[in-house]
Image 1 (cartoon, helix red, strand yellow):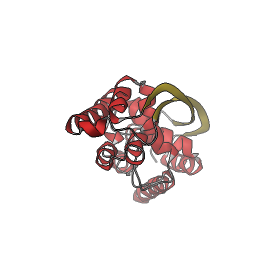
Image 2 (cartoon, one colour):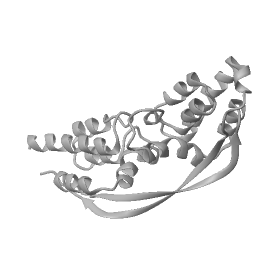
Image 3 (cartoon, rainbow, N blue to C red):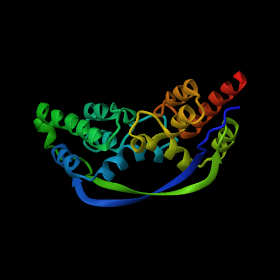
Image 4 (cartoon, one colour):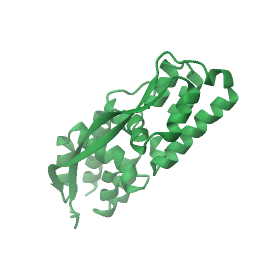
Length: 219
């Protein structure tokens, strides 16, 4: 049985939503807002959206794409914004850069649409993150599996999704510990490939548990 020298400590997280003083009524104003809003606002409308709507497997994956679709009535722009996969980004700056590039190019290609008034304004909000120990630790794969079963949605989201920015790696807390703590690199890679866009948090958790059980049968 593999035992990690550094046990995995589970945390839970809550987010306080704050409405900023920026809003946009046209796509051109929306671009300006993307350029000037806080990092916390970019996080709120992309990473945080996935956690908030964990029960959805269809529709647009971030608030920016949803506004472009529902309020600005620009389906093509919405699809481009939704195509940006947060798993590809190690920093908010890089994600902001691509968001601005997509919207900026759209404004150049469709100048009339960029000044067209939306049905409703987009209000830039931001998340203030508060983390607390969840009260569980794991030093073995068996302990890790048991803890995963008891995690809240908030804790699972914190370790499986938002951790990518904290680690500055294209992975998650679970995979990072499985590889470095227990030396289970193949399992870690399989866990990291669980699709966060086609799964809810519950179905992602179920897939993680199945992968762990498959690994345990090898022992």
